[in-house]
Amino acid sequence: MRTSSEQIPFRANAVQALDDPALRATLRNITEIFTQKRADAVSSLPFEEWRDQASALRLHVLDNLEDYIGRFAGNATRAGATIYRAKEAAAAREIVASILKDRGATKVVKSKSMVSEEIHLNDYLESQGIEAVETDLGEYINQLAREAPSHIIVPAIHKNRRQIGELFAEKLGADYTEDPTALTKIAREILRQEFLSAQAGITGANFAVAESGSIVLFTNEGNGRMVTTLPPLHIAVLSIEKVIPSLTDLPLFIRLLPRSATGQILTSYMSVITGTRKPGEFTGAQELHIVLVDNGRSRVLAGAYREMLKCIKCGACLNACPIYRVVGGHTYGATYPGPMGVVLTTLLDGMERAHPLLDATTLCGACAEVCPVKVPLVQLLRGLREERVEKGLTPWVERKGMIGFGWVAKWPLLFHLGQIAGRVFWPIAKRIAGDKILGRMPDFASRPFRRRIS
Amino acid sequence: MTRGEIIELFIQNAAKAGAEVQVVKDQEGLSRVALEILKGRGSIFCPNMTQREKALSLPADRCTQAYASASLCIEEVLGAVAETGSLVLSSQAGKPVQAGLLPGHHVAILPAEKIYQNLDDLFGQYGHSPPTNITLETGPSRTADIELTLTLGVHGPGRLSIIVV
Image (cartoon, rainbow over all chains, first blue to last red; front, side):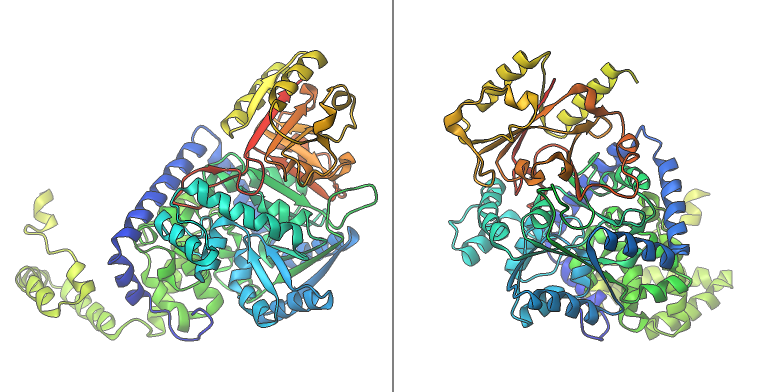
């Protein structure tokens, strides 16, 4: 659904999502909980100072990205890793598949990686006869249901416990239960065998450290640790902008990422992995391959929207967004949903395909307010929306309507008449159109705002 | 911060993350608390490398070298971070880092003098050549993937006990 070059049908998707009361209840619940937890976690800390520091540091890395990637690659190689650079998604997929094929691997375990979703790695591996088992509980649920993630931190949050119970009964032959603890235990037992028998592990990375050649992984479940310590072969697939200069910069990002994502001081596990197992060690893969994916990022870096690449993929802007909160992740029809997703998808996939997503904003700025690295999301969204108008990509009715409104707004008398006409004809138009979107629009106020405040 | 305040902060944050923390004065206290935790917990993996580990007097018939199938792992850890309530594990400790991950219950022996005040103190020491694997363990394995309901022990241990000596 995401590989096609067709326009993303955001409006049609949104209408569907708005008509799903179960989904809306779930979304309201999770976004409110996450927002509250984040707010509690950042209070009484010099959080603003940390955001400024992190923003400046991320920008510094972007300004010198080639240099930092070079240093990362050199130091990772010195520590025993093999580095690959993939310009496009297809190249990245082929590199991963050929590493696995060369070693006769037919089954791999994966820990959650958004960039592997972006390049559609699992489907490709399957077409090459390699089974990739997702081991993050949410991703495992999505894989069983053959669905895409709907949130970058809690990927199966669009499903409720009954749906998951039914899914496990149908796909795994488990006795039906809707108890999250029992469901988790079922997955634990099946996946434990997969960890112990897998020939290779695939992960993403939250950060790549230039000065030491390390990759850094945050997980709560422990699957990231399993995937990187049990199989003899580890392949890490990450996008090029994940680099930070040195291990001494890591504490700053440790302080920002989990607090912004889930409101935790730190996730249950965080691993810094540097190369392959050395003599005298009992942990570490025998082979570590690191695939650095560009997939359009160099182009973004050279353009006016480069600050988007400061993003550390915490998901805070999703939870804060009034649009995401009512339509959920699948409505965006893209790998990355929410405010960061709208911008990143438009930049990576192109305006022609992704421009309908630019409707998915109120420009209220709640996203930018919670962003731990101060990505200027509102400016980026506004810039892209202006470009969309300039390219004539907005719907005909909207374009003409805006011209008409501009004209009417210049003449107080016309404007006043318009208000009266609106109050009379708007409810009739809504009824006649019977359109779901129009039907949801609010009515005109019985007294204009101007008169209510005077 | 004084040593006492650092220890106090660590205990607070580790408990917040869901770890069960106990403080003992000496080896005798350690052995007593450890045996209490081990009571009725099935097979035990212990690296048996450090002084403190060796002096535990574990029930020999329940000890195993196969950590992947043990029900509990008891080990002395390299250190901890007070700021986050985390334990510090490393591949340079001469034992597998994953030994504390696979069993359902991880029991960590933590010498109080090895608690770093903050993350900067920890990550300031590695420079260009850190060990292959440094892991911070903060509380038990957890997920909220099903309706944001907190569930412990997804893939890693569902219980984390820390004995501060």
